[in-house]
Image (cartoon, rainbow, N blue to C red; front, side, top):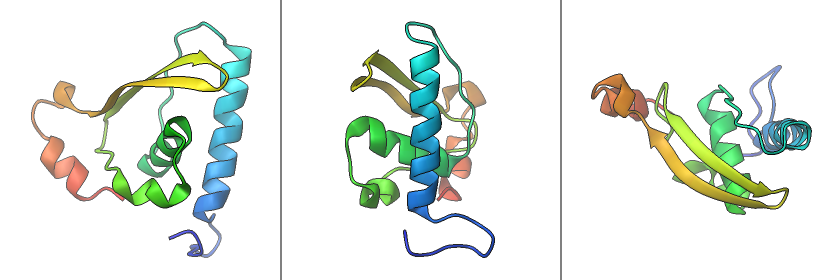
Length: 103
C-alpha cells in the first residue's frame, strides 16, 4: 500500500512520518497529562503501528471504526501500553457498520 499515492495526497510513509512527528511533539510538550486526539483511521492505524513497534506493513491488520476510541498510556518517550483499541461501545452497537468500510 505504501507506494500508492493519491494525486495531491501522501504515501503511507508520509502519513507515518507526519503523524509520528506530531505525536512525539505532543508527548514532549504534555508529559504526564491526559490528552485527547481525534483523527482519521489511517492516522490512527499508523500510530498504532508506531506504538506497538510494528512495521508499516502491519497497517492493514487493524480496523478503526468511525468514532472509535483507542487508549494508549505513554509510560515514557519510548514505552507505551495499549489499553484499548477500536472501542465503539459508546455508539450503541453500530460498530459493525462503521468498521466494515474502514481502511
